[in-house]
Length: 238
Image (cartoon, rainbow, N blue to C red):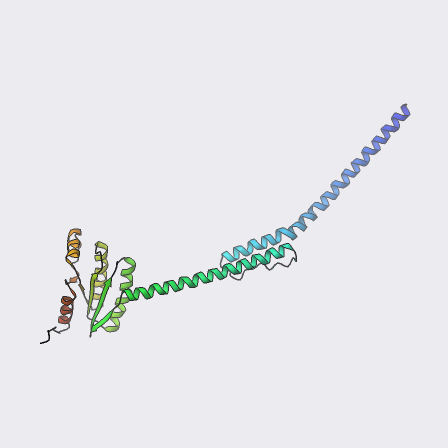
């Protein structure tokens, strides 16, 4: 019985030693295989993903030619090709939007010029009818269009008719004063016509200082004044 127990104990010891050796071998193999698998996964998955992230960053920074162009010949290449097509389509949409924005800006400029027509009614006399709301942007447009016209025509008088402006408040009055000052600096007298009773009443109620503006109630008075400044006289026929 003792010999049998001893034999069993030896067998168990051998089995345990073999199991320990197998466990050690598996651990060693794992230490060797896991880094290899990690490296393969990096090359297979992580590197393409990082390349796509880098392409996104380059594209966002303004590099319109940034593309993945993966050569893995598997699902990742399919994904990369789809990603490149998406970037190309986005670039086309951005180009279309920029073109549309440029067209809208050009249309706005043309409409602004149409809404602020400067015409020469006599040698050295310009006429500018204002229609619609006058705000800061519109006032700048008026300045940008009027001053070159004064220079080109060598104008000495500018009639600015505001009968088509629905509201004249402190801001609008300030814009008109700026235009008048700029014209004066170029040797051109600005005459503001179309000051209706309602506009005059509003200006007085608001306490707006328009002392630097030469104003008339109607266009006829402004034309008569402008002609007089040029040494001309308006006379009725007959």
